[in-house]
Amino acid sequence: FSDCLIFPTEADKKLKVEDAEKILEESVLTPVEGDKKLFLIGDFSEVNVQTQNKLLKLLEEPPKNVYFLLGATNAHSVLTTVLSRTKKLEIEPFDTIAITKALQRIYGNKYEADALSLCAATSDGNLGKAQNMLEGGYYKTLLDTAFSLCLCPSHHLPTIVKQVGEIKRQKEFLSTLRILFRDGLILKTQGEKAKNNLLLSAEIENVKKLVNAYTIPAFLYAQDAISDAEK
Image (cartoon, rainbow, N blue to C red; front, top):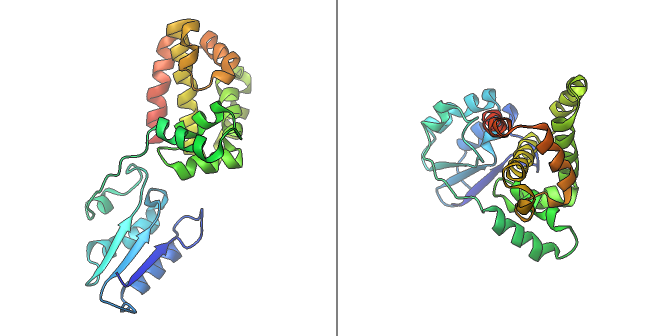
């Protein structure tokens, strides 16, 4: 490919309608060298419906020798009309153990083992995301908020829910909730002997509070509810 254009053009920015309009304009221009042009669009699962619809016809009938590579961490929020016009290439994410080991190699003893495990487990198999969580300290805020939500008295729930709704990293927050309920279920069913199997061993006292607050059916229901929320 002589031309490879990457969108969105700024880090941590979502593709917008004006970006889609620029892609439409660029797609009809002749490549500077060679005869092929590639548009690389990152995290298409975060693109809103209006912008996806703006690109729909172009994806269906692109100009000759124009190609699109759409990256997405999941297909839940990608329109079915877009999915029907694309070929799906699934790339297996790294597992939690592999990412944890990579973080250990990169950072050594700079962070606690629990922090590495938590960031790895909430990264959706993406090493870069795990590093951002770790270096930015986001995991601490997510963890504190998750425990506050799960353990707060019912009369405080509306306030906590409002705070949760304002969190920017909602995907990671849901993953953090999943880990809380996972560890709680393990401790509830296996007792103290399961301590070494917990991802949040440093938070054992808070996990014990979860065990006292929730029944086994509640722990199982929570996992299903989180899956629905992610979709």
